[in-house]
Length: 249
Image 1 (cartoon, rainbow, N blue to C red):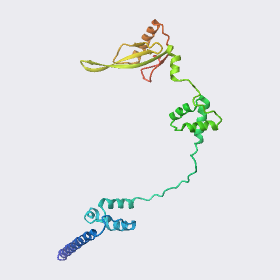
Image 2 (tube, one colour; image 1 turned 60 degrees about the horizontal axis):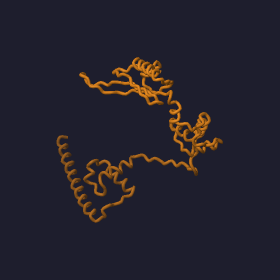
Image 3 (cartoon, rainbow, N blue to C red; image 1 turned 180 degrees about the vertical axis):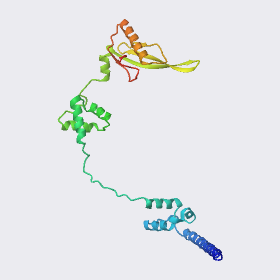
Image 4 (cartoon, rainbow, N blue to C red; image 1 turned 30 degrees about the vertical axis):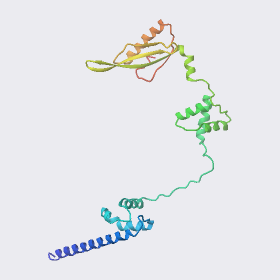
């Protein structure tokens, strides 16, 4: 066995050298043949499969052998053959536009009967619910339910509401001011009250900690000022800040 092992190694090296010489000859012959052919060769599906079966196991060494296509194109062919083929499902199409779901129609009719909105305001309410219907679709639904599709049944607007209640309506919100101190910058908070009818503004004293108790106290101070100015506010508009507690209201 000690004598046969080196002999086998010599035979294997000789066979590899012989294969290398054969491959080198085939590469030169292939280059000569390619000069007689057009620059681009269009292959069929069967030819691509034959090339893939022959070169799949060669790996990166295939770069030195490929001449008919680039190595990236060959890799793309391999990915296409490995990708599963999905059958396309053909859905029979019916002529005309698809019909609106019955639930949508019932929702439009229910909102119309409860609110009295026209289709313009109905569109706004439907968009809030995440439903996208066209104005023509809403008008058609109302017409099929024997409800006249009036564009705007309610002529009231936000501007009209503010004008009617301007004498008794307040608006309130915070504003901030940056103050530089020896310890660094701090934010000071002020509470601003605006009387809508007279456009009079009352600004509270500032504080660095606008808690609920401080906000309620500023509301009392403003109420005293409103009485001295002969103002009679009954409603106030503010955001959902947590410092606006029921005590403040």
